[in-house]
Amino acid sequence: QVQLVESGGGLVQAGGSLRLSCAASGRTFSSYAMGWFRQAPGKEREFVAAINWSGGTTYYAGSMKGRFTVSRDNAKNTVYLQMNSLKPEDTAVYYCAAKARDGGYFYTTPYDYWGQGTQVTVSS
Image 1 (cartoon, one colour):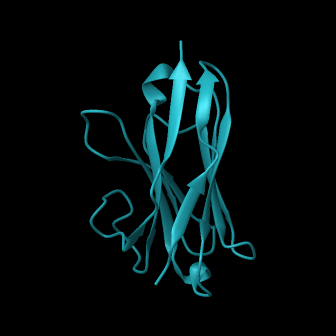
Image 2 (cartoon, rainbow, N blue to C red; image 1 turned 60 degrees about the horizontal axis):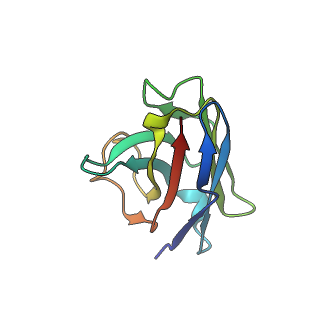
């Protein structure tokens, strides 16, 4: 069992930055791939970024590439999402998720555990 708790969301002006954190419980954190997803009001949850168990491989949605950076610290059981050059369209609830198996990073179904989410609001 893995419990995930996101933090770091808030209100920021367009062009600003935020760093989200996702703290995981359990001793097996380093064996899980981690993903970040977001969901805006009235829209489906969408993939943002993911990182494999070691941190050696990362994946990004096209619109986030170059602006967002996903990283992890297995010693701290934490995954991060650094978000720069934020736009109003980045406004959403951001969720982290953990998956035990490789592959399927871009889809919600393969993920086994989810956090409760943290709100990010970008004002214009």
